[in-house]
Length: 206
Image (cartoon, rainbow, N blue to C red):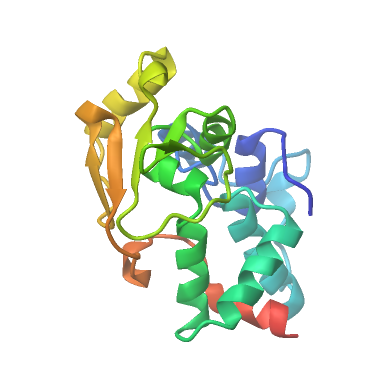
């Protein structure tokens, strides 16, 4: 599965969840809660196979975090070899990706934008530029926007919008200094993801 570069709204309708996690996409899904295309409203009739259910769940999570199949599977295999509940460990590894943390802190409005933001060198980790979206953030790391990037219009707009939203409880954010700290790993109950990770474990264990 390559990285999807088309309409995130259409893909969200296909998967049945808000992949962008934005209000705009959610409003669109509320108006059209069915798959796109001429026969979108007819889809879903009949009972899907067990394989199909597990495949769809895997696709949802990979697309939510904007990962291709190779990256996604490698991360899952790493999680499977770490002590603890595999599903929770896997989600924590996904949450520790730098592009995701930048999104969670509100510096970017979507993970797709966050990935571009990181790639263009606007993000610092503990004061040093990091331009690798998959960089793994550690507990205690400070993530900030570089000084020269703080005046960019879309970044300022994103931070103003973030001030009106609830920050994830595993992150401490200081919007006035365009910085935040990854203070702990998220617990499963912290992650309001419409995903059954056990299906993904079963998919890769088949």
